[in-house]
Image (cartoon, rainbow over the protein chains, first blue to last red):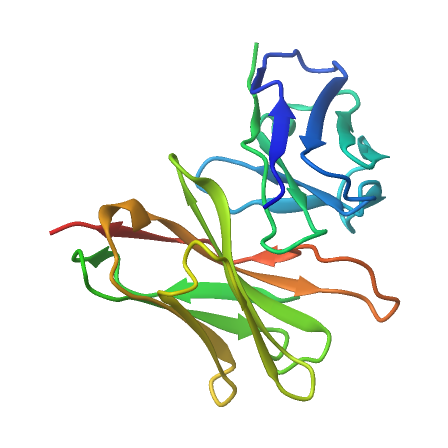
Length: 107
Length: 126
């Protein structure tokens, strides 16, 4: 299985900050990487697919980059509704695996 | 707009079978451009993909090795839903179980879980 390592595990930014979350994979996966946002008691919600493509309906302050083994999710000008947990997920090899999550909490 | 809805018992005894169904609205379980997945989430395991089914002239199934010997996913076209059956459960199977779709545009692209059910909490306890 491909191992996914997210960092940091927790972030405490302020509204308006730019936030960067990284995801590293145990082997090269080209651009087969997705990002999700999850709020308490809710299902994950797809933000970014294929490393950098914005899912329909997702605000443009969310962006993704990277290829190979290193990927980044950036949230520009953080909004109050962005405080949540974020997960990366590889779509290169079965079984599809997820990172352990990065919690973005209010400072 | 696709919607997915899980249903099933919230409490299962150890060694018994955990059964859930996922009702699909807004798409067809037999769609040739979709796959239908089960994913669970627990504090100890995080998000864990369990398996999927999809139709491409015939039905296909993929399962995670960790549950392959215990898991069955079945489509039911008459009801437009798909089900999960996990045998011989233990407390370690306690989790929120989600069904999720992987639907891609005609232009293709890689897997992504684009729609999710609200989740069903299943507790394994005597």
